[in-house]
Amino acid sequence: MNREEIIRIAKEAGGDDWGIFKDFMPEIERFAALVAAAEREDCAKVCDDWQNSFEIDTRGWWASFLCAEAIRARGSNV
Image (cartoon, rainbow, N blue to C red; front, side):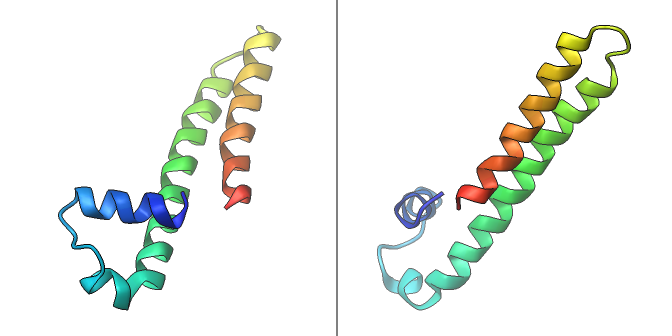
């Protein structure tokens, strides 16, 4: 999530253009990054749980493993 996306989402949530955002943008960006990281980890855990449900089907296990890894890797691009 980049700065422009954060501003757009904050505006959709009822924020003003640059009144409060201007003074608190670093904190807002950090908050958005923490929320996004938590959501990514929750999504990856769904894949982990799915992966743990496969006992014999190695293709399903591998697909769920790769899914979790891909989701977690998105955080390294921020």
